Image 1 (tube, rainbow, N blue to C red):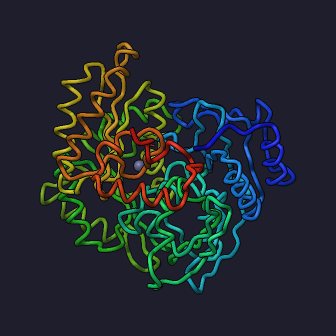
Image 2 (image 1 turned 90 degrees about the horizontal axis):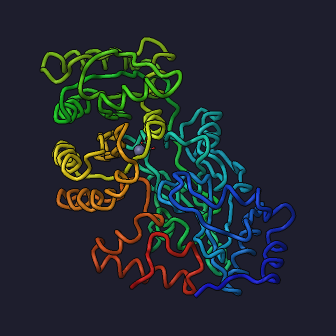
Length: 477
Ligand code: MLT
Ligand code: ZN
């Protein structure tokens, strides 16, 4: 069991982290005490921020020896409290923000090696500077860091075509709980030498080791694109359109996002600079994008033709294809501002869930019925990555209702939504991870054999339980 660090352990940790490698003033530590959603407020005596892998290794070796719990932290954008220390004041935070070098971009290998503290936006820019694409894309990419993206197996808006973060990794460098360094920065597409060890650390939220660098897959840069906002009447029509566009556009279809009319209205009303370029009345809006490395791909024509055919088939109520880059950006801004609009609107209950794509209409219909029955103060805003079967089935508090009463209904609704999702063969965490928020639910709902395997892996790699305790795997009862 970890224990609270005493003064000499804290001094040794500072020395291990090196010059400029720690923060302990109240003001400096404050941002690390709480999570992005302000669900938790923890305490910590020290934030360590070593500048390199060796510094991380020294810190972890010491933590292992002294049995000090460590909470790794990237851009602190977790929705599940995955990077926040607990309330004990005994856990130190390990920020990876100074490991922010792009070590190597190799256009010929279609790979690049970046450190964990590089922001996702900086990683994208590094690839772009070499005429390559790093395709992971999400709203918080200016702040979220590669280490956090890896540790939560982040998704975003291009998963339909390129997969999640796990699918984009060729190799990892990881510091283990005893301070040893796993040097796995290979750029191989094929490597069948035993267990896929790197995969263990992806989505593990820093509970099995601390990722310090990654070799990531790159793709040809996009040279042609076509973006559209499309209005449809029902989620089933959206699904039918997805199949129609996949057939027409093949792999060029990279984004297929869904938003209800209410989300659009809210976003236009509450976020400056957002407009509804479609100005239509459809119940559901879709953001659709095709991209290709071929500048002659003629994607605007492909999209226009296939959407035209979809209108004729009665799948689409109305559609607007962006006529300029600015118009495409406005469509993206509309979609990416939905979470911010929801935050501004008031309190919310969030469920990041996935189901087989064909079950999405059922999830939406049955989920809305649950909210009607269980949360009279609530208003559903279910939006997200329809092409991946991932819905952010969120519920906002209606104006004029009581916030405390609304929030008090959260646990009962969550239970019902998770039961529904499980009944549909889905997952209670699609892309935001488990963190502290869902550790209890994972322990309750995971297949017992799978959970036992997870606990065995944790015990093997972190026998003293110093790595991000209480995240992903709740303490057994
Ligand atoms: C999104 O897709 O916008 C995010 O994953 C969910 C959110 O920020 O609510
Ligand atoms: Zn999302």
